[in-house]
Length: 518
Image (cartoon, rainbow, N blue to C red; front, side):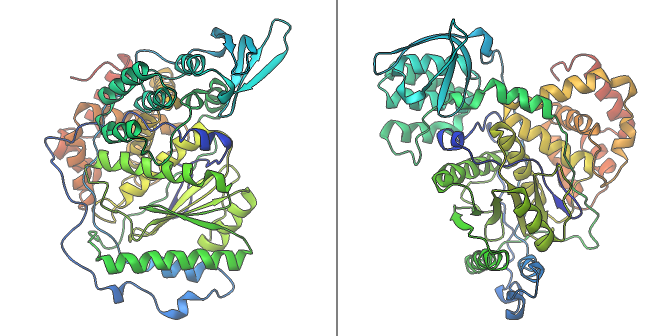
């Protein structure tokens, strides 16, 4: 999604007040490890000599452009391959109430009352339209805890592990112990990986306590996302590498040197562009950002939460670092800075609709470039999509997946991990409505060419079908592709299906209303 040339990218990145209030939903993908595949290490056994990885001192200097510095980073050698992803369908039996369905009668801490129909809300306040058609507002922390809790519960997705966790934390913080127990119990049922966070919530040891769950379900934001659709997306333009390179492990010394190189590169960017990016480091990311400093902790936690979820899907320990050093993320306030950096660092002329991309050299080093965008839900969806690409790019070898498989997998995983965005449901409806006119063979035989915008939902439903049919066979197929076997041959080896048989089965599934696959 959203990329050009040798890069892949997807949509917008935002840093708004809601981000500090709610680190956004990361829901639905984590499940028990695959019993058929077992746990694999993301690292091989060969250690690469660090001297061969690091570039000469002359490449450290800018020579009128950032390209030499980028080349220096890209010369760093690859890390080891990952293990396989699995998926688990999101259980959904209900959803948040619509704005027009919610009537408000709330007592504020000062004794005032907030009465009327819900007009909207964000991460800081709730808006009500009274009987005189006047819009009144109150900050969330002005509401009495019980009323605030019940309103949040009404407006959030009841089948989201993240939402239930956040509601549980709110209840613990505000003395609603019985309600907290109920939400934490449901959180564990939906996603057992939350167990440790729940323990820390009870002991008050969470790094950042989420104040609200409600910001995850702003109906107006969802409506905006539905209007946006997939407009403005560009796909990764891959090509078959000349030489197949299996990723190998690095020593701690090499990893430390790579991190230092990335830090130096950030300094060089500031010097060349005259900017004041500050660096925010986590276990797996270095974020060079202009966004408000108050958002640093929330943004860091958001990145790490997505990383942990992806590790769960690829069945590797979160303690393992799949990146060379860490993944650098450049987060600009303005599109002008985003475009300038793309041009000077990556020789990219980004199109007008592109909001973010990942530069990927398929040798182990990647870099994310993005700028602030207002829709937090789209931010989460896009960011997750791009993180999926960074994982797939690091999986086993430098062999990329063909366009339909690469983008379809990123769409399925991001749509499942951010179910509130409803991207999978919208894509399914689009495919079902246009099924007779779809030329699926054109998509399957396009090689590494990116899908066209109308083909995105087609690619997504194809991958969704294969994953639901048998996740372990899907991983077998991807392993074969990553080892150099052609895509259709890998599909046939894993599933016993060639492209014609896949199309027949897929059309039957779509026309049947996407029934559960036995």
